[in-house]
Image (cartoon, rainbow, N blue to C red; front, top):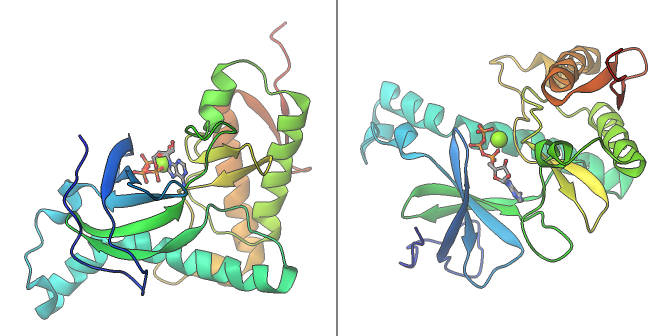
Amino acid sequence: MAVTRKTAGRGFGLPFSLVFGDRVAKGSERQVHRVVDEPDVLLKTMRRKYLSHIGPDADRSFLGWLRVQQAYALYRRELRAYANAMVRAAIRQELPPLAGLCGLVLTEKGLGQLVERISSADGGMALTLEELLATGPLAQDRLEALNHFVAALYDWHIPAYDLGPKNILWDEMAHRFVLVDGFGDRAVIPLKTWVRTLNNRRLDRAFAVLARKSGLEWQRRARQFSRAAPAA
Ligand SMILES: Nc1ncnc2c1ncn2[C@@H]1O[C@H](COP(=O)(O)OP(=O)(O)OP(=O)(O)O)[C@@H](O)[C@H]1O
Ligand SMILES: [Mg+2]
């Protein structure tokens, strides 16, 4: 259902009030909406089940504030990881393998994340890796792009815990895969953020899981995917 009421707030100095457009996806944690008159961004809000138990003055008690932080832990985790990646980007002068995070905005559905909208060449919804694989084996150039994405996650030291094929989008214009979800460090003591080898091992496990879910073959030593050999 499209929501048309203007949002009350502005976030991080963004110079416009947002109007919710159609909902384009509903994940297990967030709803994803278009923004009217802003075709290059999407607005993600937490699903109601995460916010319904939090009253307007919850942050004034210690336990209440913990609950508020927990409800929005996903945003804070992604923002930290994104900020680290963009600091690297400043040195490298290239983009990390993540969809852009444009900021946090106040909306009538709680705090929202404004994100870069990854799209197909005709401006439609970008295909997820899951959708691409459903159409048949990956073409050679896509497989190469996927392996480029894999190498980039290690190289950029991106902490990731859910590399499910729905979280990896094909950015047709840039001819590359990007991660839109499942990144950031969930640990209270963020060792994987600090220690590259620990992060690499976590990525090894996450890519092995992706291989099982996607039917691709994961070559652990080379840290690359190949097409699964046909069954004998
Ligand atoms: N930046 C983006 N550009 C285009 N489409 C996106 C973008 N981010 C998310 N989507 C679409 O919305 C879907 C759900 O988004 P997302 O994975 O962020 O939600 P979630 O609730 O965190 O997911 P999950 O169910 O994995 O927990 C994605 O699978 C993708 O199809
Ligand atoms: Mg997801």
